[in-house]
Length: 104
Image (cartoon, rainbow, N blue to C red):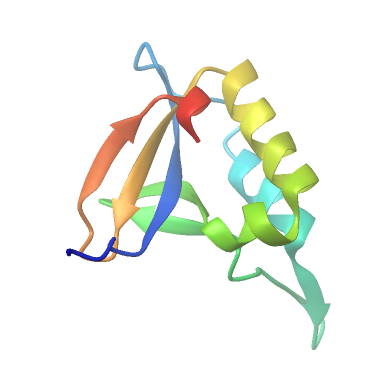
């Protein structure tokens, strides 16, 4: 039996109709919800953090966030739904498949 490949969710800064989402710093703002402050700087968590994919800043949501902080996970998805943002499931090998936000 084939074992499921590890994955994470990626939310783009682009709406479903292809428009750039503003404000441009929303990814850092949401990532800071799960960040810590150490040595005079903000340190993003492994569960929720910015990533750069093909030159575009995106929000990475690791499955662990849903398990360990379900309320925060739902708030992030609520934000993405309200703003009609594109979401993907990215496997460990980097392959991304677009998924509806209601499926996350």
